[in-house]
Length: 198
Ligand code: VGL
Ligand code: ZN
Image (cartoon, rainbow, N blue to C red; front, side, top):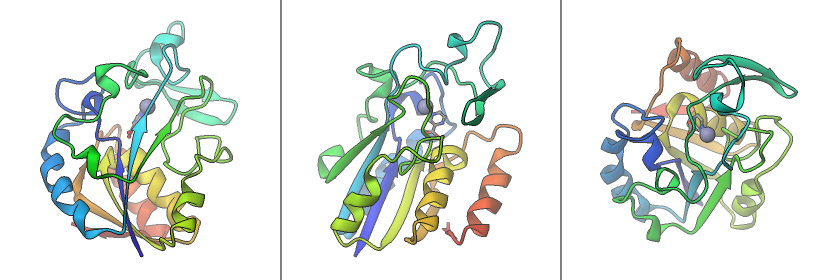
């Protein structure tokens, strides 16, 4: 059984948003067209409380894209984005969210960021997605969405580690590309056994 995981196609990650990924809106229509071919369709939604610890604005003297050390490891600081209940946290208006079976929200714990759809950045706290997919009999996953080098990357690697058969459709993703993060992400995904398909 085949699952489609659509990562963070939200206004703040699209042009005009506070953490805009170049071309983020270009993938919406082709992702909509892909949904019908899958047994399960899951959307993820980055969903931070105001003042979240991943926001540069929560750290005195720090700027967006600085790196800090958190109790769980290194963490990039981001512009405020995807704050719960705001328009920036909403899915892109043209995304066919009605055609999804499940929406997984992540990053809602104030002190921990969550790039992956499966585990938060402490690599321990589960989102519950694994159990959902397993109980629905899904063994093969296709991932698309934003951003390829952060949330798609972490989700794909966790999925592969959990034993799912994972394909990332890179043409249906867009990247932030911070200091070479895209090249690193592509090689990390390959090393984890993720299939990269244009
Ligand atoms: C993401 C940075 C911060 C993503 C989420 O969806 O890739 N990136 N929060
Ligand atoms: Zn975030």
